[in-house]
Amino acid sequence: MTPALRPGGLTASLRRPLPRAKRPTAAARRARAATAIAGLIATALPAVTATASAATASTAAAPVPRLVWQSCADGFECATAHVPLDYRAPHGATIDIKVIKHPAAEPAHRIGSLFYNPGGPGAPGTLALRAMTSLFPEQVQKRFDIISFDPRGVGTSTATHCFPDIAAEQRFFAGVPAGFPVGRQQERTWTDAYARFGQECLRNNPALLPHLSTANVARDMDLLRQAVGDRQLTYYGVSYGTYLGATYANLFPGRVRSMILDSAVDPVAWSTKDSAQAGRLGAFLRTGTDLAADHVLNAFLDQCGQAGPKTCAFAAGDAAATRAKFATLLQRLQQRPVTIDTPMGAMPFSYASALESIALQLDATRPIPYLAAGWTGLGSQLQQLWTGSTATTTAATTAADAPAPAVYQGKEQALGVVCADSANPRSPSAYPAQAALARARSGPLGAYFAWAAEPCATWPATDRDRYDGPWNRPTANPVLVVANTGDPAWPYQGSRAMAQTLSRARLLTVDGYGHTVLANPSGCAAAHEARYLVDSVLPPSDTVCRPDHQPFDTVG
Image 1 (cartoon, rainbow, N blue to C red):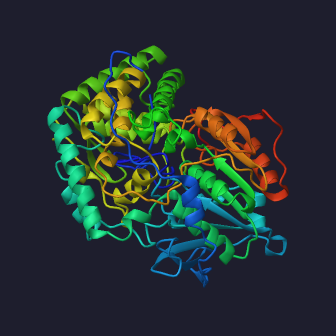
Image 2: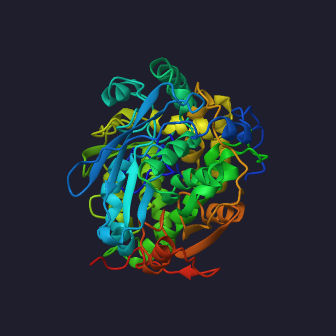
Image 3: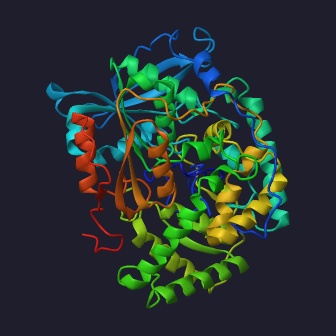
């Protein structure tokens, strides 16, 4: 999502625990109807006929890239693939795709390669794989080379850069509110800035910007499959990576060996070819991300209150008292921001940037070393904000307050995909009403997800080769969809819709919280995943697993 794009995923491994993380933008996260609010109808992004696109832009004539693997520390190997910029001109200009591999631990028993996408959109696979390899089932690590890559437009691949460096981008966004705008003046500042931002991006990336759809990433992945010598694709996609998997499965249905889609987005609701809401709601409201986030936030507050202050620092006696304390905290933050110490130094939090941070931190219920603080960490941060809200503090936060990442990961790297793939109202004036609708149906987090799609209103590029269905082409082998019932980013209903929409798919449910089963482990689910990937055996229909831990279990 943008401006902190989320579902999609930024994955938990790549999101900052504090204000400006991605998950959809990063990108994306969450969606939440008020009958009193109307007038949301606006023009949507133009659709592209999928069947024509699939036939015209294929990988059949494109040269298979040659991968020269070199050690890149800690047992990983890296290579660069050259793929067509435009698959309608397969022998024309090329772009670079950076690829990373974790070789199979038992090469004598190696089955093939498992391609992993961490979501986002805009999350670099070359970073995510290093962080997430240990979370894959042991048998999978033994039997597969696990491969990921920075998608076109992202990270260390040929990337979308709207400015010379990320510091210049942050200077551009100085004065733009972090999280989402509050009030008419901030709304004007926000919409004006993102309109100018889109034009700056087009000026600096005129050739690349029209070729960033997920369909073209799927075509790149098919060339990578051929480059590693696999006859069919074995794939594990999380969050927005599920949309990449579904796109691949329908562009290349005969080439699917095994495919796990972890915490899936409803492909019809996202792409909106067949959705009646395409022209009046932004992508994250259509998919219900705000509703999912609101549900899980309330579960967090209830469980925090029940756990008590020894485990959740923000607890206030019981669930009801903790909810009341949270409402008071938000009222205080609306009056003035708070500066607190974070792992990245002192950082100011406004009402909007605090809500953005909370939304992102709901993803991992348990701490993941170096990656996520878990729900206990979220409780500690909220308590810091509570204590700090009684003191005099600094000015409101802006988008420029975020620390710069080591690799250029600007907002444009998520927006280029989101705005290419999904239909969103094309008038900036539609978004204040959407934010009001979201607040009415999903509480304080709703506005964050409504405004996350607004930059697409003035985004200057589309991709004629995007794919928007059909989504039910019969695949050579069945797909396995896995999901937590309490997912705060892509709601569980999206995974059910994905499993029902694909021609051959089965849903494996985990009765737990958090975004993605991979980041919120379940030994039961991992065993079914390993058997499916290694032996092509699906779990029984209607299988429900439990997570290994509950959110506020004592951390050992």
